[in-house]
Amino acid sequence: MSTLPRIGQWRSLDELRALQDKQLPHTLAQATRSPFYRARFGDTPPAFEDLEFTSKQDMRDQYPFGMLAVDKSLLATYHESSGTSGQPTPSYYTVSDWTDLAERYARKWIGISSADTFLVRTPYALMITGHLAHAAARLHGATVVPGDNRSLAMPYSRVVRVLHDLEVTLSWSMPTETLLWAAAARAAGHRPETDFPKLRALFVGGEPLSAARRARISEIWGVPVVEEYGSTETGSLAGECEHGRMHLWSDRAIFEVYNPVLKTVSPEGAGQLVVTPLYREAMPLLRYNLEDNVEVSYADCPCGWLLPSVRVLGRSAFGYPVGGGTVTQARLEDLVFELPSGYEVLFWRARADPDVLRVQIEVPEAHRAAAESALTEVIRRELGVDCLVTGVAPGTLVPNHVLTGIHDVVKPRSLFGADEDWDKALLYY
Image 1 (tube, rainbow, N blue to C red):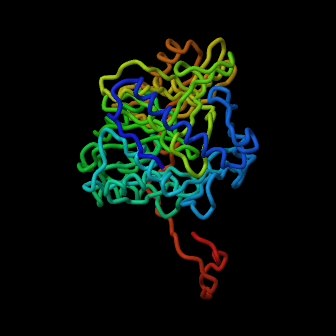
Image 2: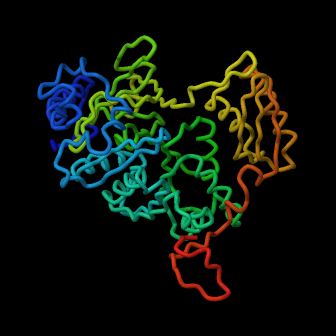
């Protein structure tokens, strides 16, 4: 692998594009070693702008190793995405690929160091997310707590204990997880804003995050919330600077914006994000359409990184019709979390019926009437739809036993005593 660029190595957008242009021929040459791309264009790729998009379906069709561009013995890890299509989307990486992956993820303005204890609370299974944070933290000498979030061995009560007793300084999770931790901490008698003094930042990704929910999470825990954007197929694609803007790692990949309506491609604007990683050995991807809805801008940022910024809309851009209006999750989430924090609303759900938006919020009885009234008023005013807001008791949407329970996780066995339940034979509980 060529020497990897570092932030600050370029002094203008022209120099940034020159870095891309210098690496692109190596990327195209590596792609010709892949059976998939060799079948598509042989040993001589067309001009970059004439390349067909690579789709998610292409990757599924090439399962498991149709896109492999190195000898299989050189692979370090194999992964599959968390998609719900029913077909596996494979991804694989060499040791050199992992150097690039870990460096990109670690580009956090808050910094990662050997003084940190880093709780990784995303899946370690076939997805890359947990392994990515783990590798980045170890690259900088941090102590990793591999919490996972798909394991019965790590219920929320244990997460709270680990956060508190191990004096965790950094964490990596989906934004919703941090609200669940807060509720679980309070259920355990802790105050999130004061009882975790070593915590200095919450790294989050994996789902759209509205500005209001982000601000509420930061207020609850009293630390910055730092966003990350990427995928199992690509690793980290963008990270946040100290001014709160998400920047695409354009020194490590070429990014394009595809408008599926106009069938046009441009370097910025609104549309679907298309990415070409520039330092990929095991599985080169040429003009891979992530199908994520984004807005990309090259406007100046005070951070001085000289990288494009991106707003990731994802499915939050999709709206449901209600009466004569349209409701999106992002906008509705903003309205919910713009309620006064004293109402203690953390969890909500909504259903877009044809004529009315039905919303439920968990809220203590003392604040229920005020919260219902305030949210009803703002939804009707801001979204222009009829709504029915219902406050429900805490524990209705997120049951208390989920926050406080401890699972009995044991190793499987086959021999039981006369008074034991042998239906548990061979199984983990």
